[in-house]
Image (cartoon, rainbow, N blue to C red; front, side, top):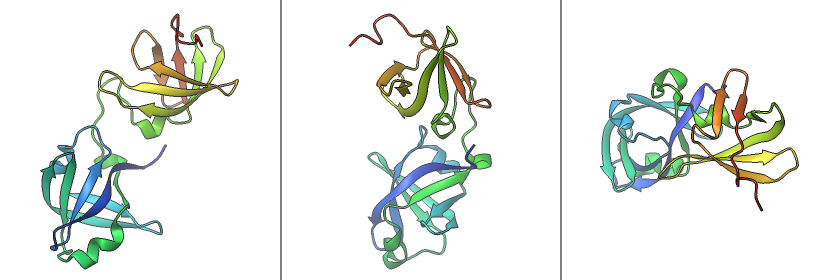
Length: 170
């Protein structure tokens, strides 16, 4: 399992005083208010940055980092990921999982038949949708509802599913 989890991506600078506009990749944008530090993935290394200020603008989060007070100091970080350690991640409720822990998981049916591999999780308004590449190489969309997703075993990397009538119809 990954020890670092992505919480956002720096999209551009904001103003001239070193603030950045961040596209959040976390379900709860308000988590930025409680966050003290993030790791900036420069591509070569992870730099720990202390968060000095947080504002919200449309779907973005505006962050100010301690010690970075000039647009020229943050310009080079556009497009870079912001990460947190698993210890600083949001505490999960029962039956909640980090997407990073699920990708690549083996998917089996309730009849114990190998079905495929979880390739992607689509976050929609109603419920998440799991994109599974079947053992035949087809892509199947499974709704993340309890009638379809019977069990998610993060430790053993296995998801047990019930293929509801009509899901596999062409």
